[in-house]
Image 1 (cartoon, rainbow, N blue to C red):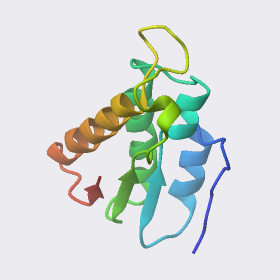
Image 2: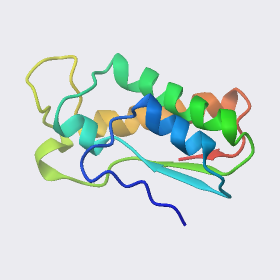
Image 3: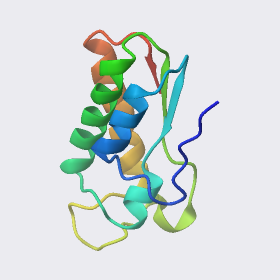
Length: 116
């Protein structure tokens, strides 16, 4: 078991995706969203693209490994409130929708070992 938990610092960094890509494994679990939203690191435009790029990079090294993407658990302050009062930033409800749509899109394009 290899745990790359980043304790509040998971921001879908490409270098982390490359580390996962290059690490032998049987199954991959990614829990994404809460850290990014808490600090308003990505927006409605950039979050889905970053998640797609991260997953595709991981897939370059593990094309057939089961990959589970987990969206944020419940966190009252950001469920329906944005961390920054601007339309481009996301609530957790919106993040969960983006994560689900990204996984659905990649599954429709042939990634049958990707799960939400």
